[in-house]
Image (cartoon, helix red, strand yellow):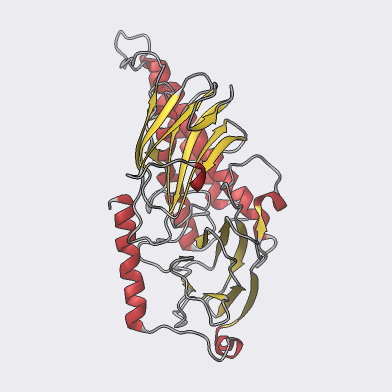
Length: 395
């Protein structure tokens, strides 16, 4: 079967182990706490398949901290861990020894933050080393910027790295999807070794092992986390209220999350008065902690798109049929999942209130002067969403 290369058997064994681990990861879809509906089963396996590419990016491809590239994480077809519907996440591997320069054009996203974090117990690392948020970052009049990551002090935009520094992540949250522009930037290691193009069998085996392990650990991690909200449905709680860990929470405002379970003949009404904030958003997703398909479904709103009532209240409705209200959260065939609310740079952080009822009781529950939306306006909402996604991701 093998030629005269002594590494042949080891390489094949590495590939076999990779495939075996991915096969075993399918057990996640059939756990007792996992919804058993066809759509949830199907999307569970799609989640595993989608995240193979992300795992390979982290463990086999973009892995060299002396030759890093800024690559995006999530998009409409690759999701995990409650991805923000408004976001473009970009990051690269780094270490705590070298000096890095990140340069380019900031773009015009409403919220913009760069975070350095250490490796850790969660799929996305551990403790935050440091971050720069929005106005913390000096940007030139032409939109250009430069950030230095290094263990020694540096003038200008600078984050001090630690010996355990592991990854840098950019968060861009877009409020006005159609008009805000994404960042264009690069990362350069200023004192790294010369690039070595050789790829060894040992590197491939190690990368495949790490990728398969990450697929399993990350998907199980997020499902385990969401199960903690599932036992307290219709209640908004932060990560740290349920699990005190060093997860890389969004700087500037930790999200509030609740689990919803809405049969087809019921609706869930969520009410809150948004505070004055630099940015706020509502996200909506399924049990696998994936946002719904925000290209084609109404599954989010934010400080730009939301329609507030005359008294300033935000009224959201989870309903399987269009309720004719502007801030509809479309379950897209699911009967359970999560809602996330983010208040960033806010003067206060109100907790939304939930009330569930039969579908036929919704009209009587709403204010008499509640704002409504017609078919033409609904179609315009959907067209604008897809155009905004294309502007953000290029497809």
